[in-house]
Length: 305
Image (cartoon, rainbow, N blue to C red; front, side):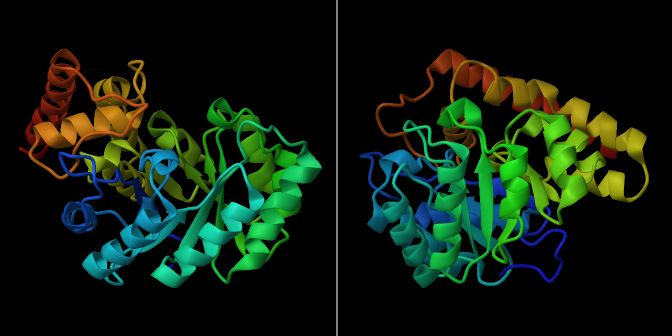
């Protein structure tokens, strides 16, 4: 379910959902359905499946398709489903895009091919071939810290001319480059780094794709709601209140997948272990995550009171 709003084609509040596994490491489709339903019920307009947080490098093609099918069954048309299909191989990415479309996805998240570090003309050709392959709208994923390759702003501007390239998940940490693209295209930008949600929204982003939303789906939606209501001071306060949890989950030396699953598990929510080469968080880390989460929820309760 994509929205009718061209400025936010997948909604405003998206969660980069973890992929739940059973204790033995198998795909937990029942857990995925329960988690997805909870996230949507608590304010997520969309779910990104099989992204970095969803452990896409270690799930099979069949598991990725099954996950889309199961989550679609759970949430119906209440939320947009964006399937991560990016790989280092253009042909494989196209295959995943077609499978995601068949499984019921509303859009595709396509990361820059990693490791091979293609030049910009090859990168542009890669994205165009994927966008040409299916009828689904595409969200480019610019995260050079992981892929080793930046999708340069001029390349994004050229790609914006493609009718199915409609959005960008922005993890480039380049406010000038982001503004350059926003000023020259109609692309919907989504903050992919939780600490940048309000700053990017304030300069015209459509919303966010958040890992922290796995455990606190209402958190950043409240930031956007306050900003939209004209209460910029409250929006800034809510963003700042999130800092301890964001720092614990996203800047503590562990991937967000590991910290999100640790905290979900500690809260009794579907998650399970991570797959190797990742390793689950230890007790000390999990205790720190719980403390940050408890601080945030206590602050929220005091604010409402």
